[in-house]
Image: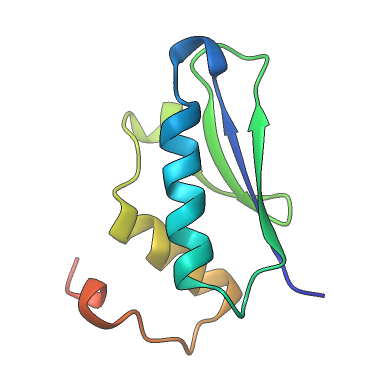
Length: 93
């Protein structure tokens, strides 16, 4: 079965639109590789955590920032489709 991305966000912080944007970007990039993207309102204030099938791949509190979309696509790709080229967003870190 294809993996599911979960984006857990703090609704009180107004981060639903950011989560929806990131979900749209991931679904566009990984159309054939993903089962779907779940937007999950968090009960924990300030939470913004991204999971692939329950495995945490990015945590805003630990990183002290939000992920760049290019970075997020690379993190997801490394888990769901390591052989996939991301084209122009592949550059050096």
